[in-house]
Length: 190
Image (cartoon, rainbow, N blue to C red; front, side):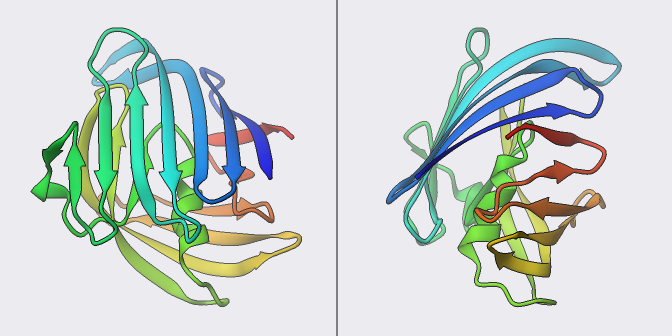
């Protein structure tokens, strides 16, 4: 099964097209074009990312290509919490299970699908946070709380950035893909 999704940022300066294959392995391929606002300057960017997960939604491989300019990032996960970055061991990412690419709501789908949720359950996780367009990675802590578990009508989850203090309630479709990310992203297709 494949799903095509288009999001735009609420401020209207970024658009993403995503294609997700929900097979084994799960494959996501997204392209984001926008304007980044960082430290008082606005800068246009474009990036393509690919994420591969196994059937249980454990991240196996992540590729991020800034499509010109800066060097890309390739991350591989061994399933035991160990990562390599561009072929080199990345001990600073040890213990992370998921990835969070800053410019897309898709990566919220990974822990939503990977973890087995009942209403009211929560999970605190360490993720590899990828800052785009800066093209940096770091380990951060996040929490997800299941407000409404996934079913044929979708679900609702609360996301909390424990390092940054940001919180959002994320309605998702029946595949666990974000419909609306209040204040940041809105789905425009389908």
